[in-house]
Image (cartoon, rainbow, N blue to C red; front, side, top):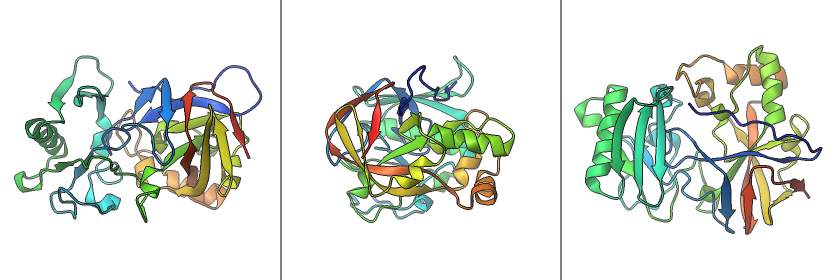
Length: 272
């Protein structure tokens, strides 16, 4: 079972509570203990594959950054949350199991081969109940990513996403139930900031572990956040709660890596 990011013990300043990447867009996150960042690059192996819709605009070799509607994602295919994915960068293999189980293996697939990609695509098609002519295509373009951000260019496609856990706790208070921070599918979860302090960050910089990140945009949220990442049920009106209580539907910010560095859980974060 995927674990929610936890607040680090002690300390009064902001620090990194958890790190995640999403090797396949739309599938579950994988926790990371250490991440090396490079200028102009996002998280290693983050959203480097995607499940392209058979009738979408994706074609192998494309250099175009495409929006979510061209892919199978939680906003429309919330049954995807019922799968736990484990990806090995060294072998390019992915294992899917049913969430909440240790032995409910669904498939092993080597994504470096056409057969492995077809195996993943057919497994997802079966899970979603797709017709034979709607089986997705496993999209992969070396050096490119398939970000949640509807990118205007290649630089934005390398964005890193950041969530302030205090803001999620405020949302939990309004909702009257604990909101799992993984609903927001971020790379970096911060703790030690006041609620909504991240909304003041665009136009500024964050420093952590030697890395310098330029924050450039808030993240406007979509219906994918209404799906519980453990139960795979669409069970909480996150967008309505945000709008009614706070007057916006944003949660988190996007940043670009400007200076290399290494992030770990507990790394101090300073804004400038």
